[in-house]
Length: 347
Picture 1 (cartoon, rainbow, N blue to C red):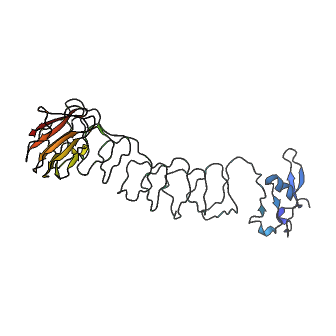
Picture 2: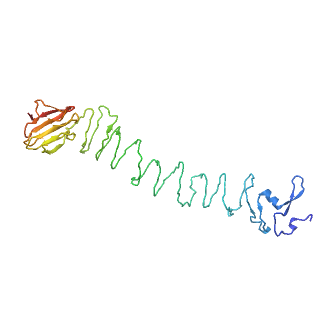
C-alpha cells in the first residue's frame, strides 16, 4: 500500500485500543508503529472507550485520573455560547476570574472584592464565625444578638428589648448620662469629681456619696429652682456647715405618753408634750455629739428629764424640769453622753 493517501483509505467502522498508528521518530525519521492505547497513555494516561469514528467530534475519553502536567495556558471553547460541564468537584489552587459563576454552592477560604456584584443571595445565614468581622453599613437583626461583647460607636433605640444584662460595668463615661428609673449601688461609693444634679427622686441605702477633690472654699449646692430638699437620714459634715438661710427642724406630733426616751430620730426636732400629768424624758446613751432637740410643755403636766446609765445632764441652775405650760427647753449633746439642758426650766 505504498504511496497511498490517507483520504484514499477505507473508513474504519470502529477504533479499538490495539489499532495501530504510524509514528515517525524525530531523530532518525524512521516510521514506527504504535497502538492507539500507547498514544493515549502518552497524551492523557486515560482509558480508551471504544466508540465509532463518527462520534469522535464529541468527547470519547473518560479521564480516570489527573496525570496531565504541562505548563502553559489552557482554553476551553471558542464562543460565548459554549458550555463546559463537570460532574463532581472542581478544585482550583489559585484564583478563579469570571464575569459570572452560577452554582448551587461556591466554597472558598477567601472571597475578595466589595461584593457589589453578588446578587440573588436570598438564603439565610445560620452558623458560627471565629475571628473578627467588620460590617460597613447597617446590621439589621429581627431576633437576637448573643455575644460576650458587643461594641459599636453608637447604639440606637430605647433599649427596651435588651435583657439578660448581668455583667458589671466598670469604666468611665465622658459626657451627659441620664437614668430614668432607679440607680442602685449595693456596695462601695458614688464618686463625683465635678457636678451632680438630682432633679427628682430620693437617694436611699447605706452607702456614702463622696465628693472627691472638693477643696476649701468650694461650694456644694443642694437644690434650686424652688424644689423642696430634705435629708431622710443623718447628714454628717466634717468641717463647717454654713447656711444662707435658717435651718429648721421638723415639728413632731403631740406626745402624751408618761415616759419618753430620746432617739437618733429626734435629732433637730421640736417635740410637743400635751399631757396634764408629769411626763418623763430619758436622755439616752450613745447618741452622737451635736444631737439636739427642743421640748415644748403644751399641757399642764411638767416635763422632767432623767439620765440613762452613763449619761450626765448639765444645767446652770441644776434644773431638770420645764417651768410650766407653754415653756420651751432644749438639750444638746456637747461631748460623749453629756447633755446640756437650757431654756425655760425649773427645779
